Image (tube, rainbow, N blue to C red):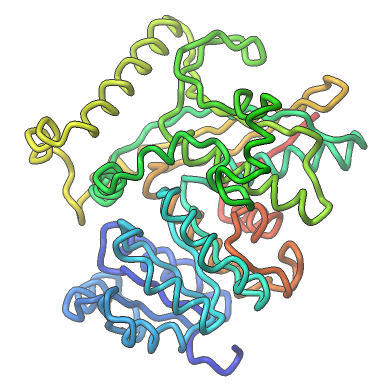
Length: 414
């Protein structure tokens, strides 16, 4: 791919998150030899972004439903980065072209049923070709997946034993953009919500295969069910609640664990992962209970189109999102507790300033794309690894180190 004119193309660059990827590349690629371009379906909007950011980059135009136009873009780049969601609507032609042209791919989807379709259609071919197709490279699901990977490897390498469990605990402040809501609404409208309950939806074997049936029979599925009630957690000595992103993040982590198991780099026998929202005192119990009730109410609204249609005019629309001040003042913390098979604990921490759904997501995504270009030889599995991968299996320590250099706190301590 060295003769292609671009290293990275940013698709969806005129959208709310897409504009932020252009700003990030403008600020962070001067010191590194990266040839990049911006792309989308509307040339004038892309010109406006280019002028607003003040960058001299090429503009490529293709509607996401126009396969031949998408092919023309994908054939010119080594990596395609896309922020154009809902991905089940606008991502199929992009991924299809990336697999055919052996172009690496990263996005910020959280649409796990769509990711399942990618696994079924493309994993075998992408794996054979060494093409890395890596969805979920935003706030869902880099902290969960990369953090778990780092904690597990610390237990294995420092303590010399397998990992039994990892628990993730999130706290955050930020806003919500219209694209994220649109993806959530489409997921519920598409009739795929039943798949969301499958804790092994993204595992290498097809859901409900013999391997899945065996898991259900031996109780593994029950140990991996999503929490639905608040509880007191003795590991962190406070109350926790179900995390609204857990049905996405946990499936990505379990796919990572299952893939590493296939590659004889297993996390540990019968490894489990769960995650929660963490609440500090005072009134941690009340906060956890209130948020759990609010999450249940919101889920109910999603499932009632008539009720949702009344609320939709008051919610962020596609292309819109939080103010600059809200995004700058946001933050997130992901604390991880890993337990070795002998019961000893390891603490992990991923933390950064900035709205997690926008500032952190953009940093995760852009550094993921740069990892694929600038440090390909150091990636997990070397140059030959491919498939429908995860941040941990496709990027691993390379992404962690790039994020540290970009100012993010990433620590693991025994």
